[in-house]
Length: 571
Image (cartoon, rainbow, N blue to C red):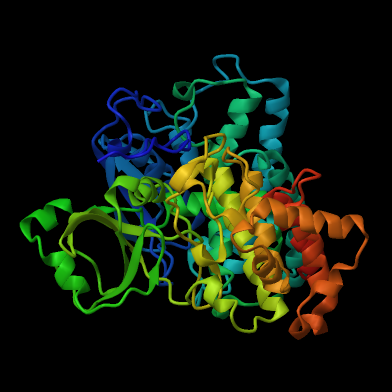
């Protein structure tokens, strides 16, 4: 099977071996690590979160990062302890009670090497790291003070933490403490967001500042990454729960949410090091042992969707212990129409590196027999809300349109920040909606890394690109602009009716640029059913016009998110 080259992985991750050609060296070399150890963490009383203790989560993040980067040379067992015990990691005869213990040790499990001993730390970094660590301490304390609402009765470690916060602030009144923490969290998030804005991790930021280019010089996470991610992940998860809802927790969560670089960093760390890892099951041997399994599974099932490269079937797994090795749930089986195109094999190679909530989740792949021919197929999680193309046939309120577009922009930002690739074929049919109308990007068969050539079967849909032949983020942003016009106006439908097969994106761009040049009111284009929200619709169309323009630089996904916050989000 020919797979595409691996994505530009985070510096602490070695992509799955099957995606690395034999002639290509691994992205980094990791020192030999002891085979296994035991992690002891405080157990969560919330089913969706493994632990609500920041120290436990930080150790878990560190060890998972080392497990991934070790390429199978290291593993650990996770054990749960009582609240009155201290989280720790035990390996051989050594015991570590925090990420600081590990970072200050001589263990091969430490974070970044002792660059200070090598004289590599500049004065700029020496002054910034303490400032960033202070900001992280604020976020940690902001979480702990809000988390105490969950504890009934309050546990000793939380009581001790709250006592420490009171001493640190010199305050005893809860309301005064909350006001102080809200202000400090606002300042802390701004500091951390500023430093990470052009990087996906603080490790990458450090490497840039120190002019380190060799991945082997710093081969794991930064201590800043681990210590920031733990409380930030818990804030985003715990403070969204109804049983801790309060004005304080809502404000703290919103502050973090509004700091886009920090939120993306938090989601990135949670997806790679806390969430269940992506494991794509290879079904080829299964189908060799039982050649009729795929045909039997899809017998009598009508395709839910069909594209130029294959058909998508909804399959409900009703019992555990099945031949597909899947848990009870609904899945999408995407079956290729032509093996020679390689569209689905390309998608399989990409999805394994996208563990994010707003991209489709792969669970399996393989070759098999279907309709008397050899096919390749993907199995992904089923997304229940249908696709945006079908949704657009009915009425969508303006508030819902804003939510969908904001979600698409964030999905693109996370994609660009994590593996620096391009969707290439972004369009309404390739945007699924979950039960809450959150967008989930799918169909990455045309995916390319930034700068790669785009042509042939992988060039995307003509209406949704600007006819450039290189994969760029601006190409995807163009598609975002066309989608926005489709959601808010009938202009795209009119354009397609007039141009027929010549309805190319570049021609649509010229149409909108001319409209702007003539200083026409974009509000005139808004659908009649959305006129009650005319001001918001016009704001969206102004953004969309910049996205499809051929005359000026298009905004980035990050800049679009910033504009959405400025225009539509509550303070």
